[in-house]
Length: 182
Picture 1 (tube, rainbow, N blue to C red):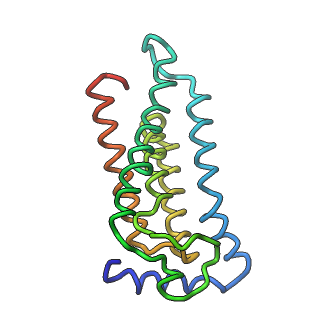
Picture 2 (picture 1 turned 180 degrees about the vertical axis):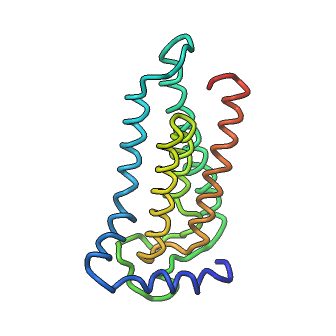
Picture 3 (picture 1 turned 135 degrees about the horizontal axis):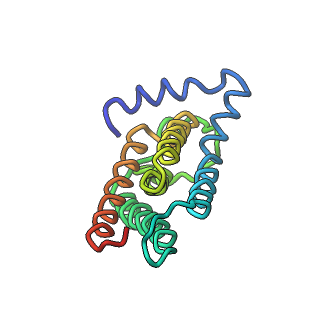
């Protein structure tokens, strides 16, 4: 936990309980917006018409999802899990004895698995279609913020997950570019 974590968390968590509608919105963003980004990703990949003149024509339709999938496996499946097993980081609701707005297992919280999963997807969207990627990155940051507000992550968990996602995507993207796969 970073020095400012507790203060920033307390401020953000303090936004809960103000209104039922706002709490519902925080819960929706924290739990369900993830799936909308995933659907959006597949929609963009499979409806994109201007893939260019690369032969075979289906090449980018396969390789861009592969870029996202391999980055996601590296980010969430390997790096985030290794860090999670090495560091002891109790979730805010467990550390502070508060009630989270969403139910979550009391397991280590650093780094955020949601961020480690979503950043490679959003960055791949950015590579495929910049505007969609920007919106996916904004939605990903909203999810991270909502997961802090709902009491299941510290701000540093979100930043850690973002860093893991960026590093993983960058490594895989570099390899794909070097091998002329995209």
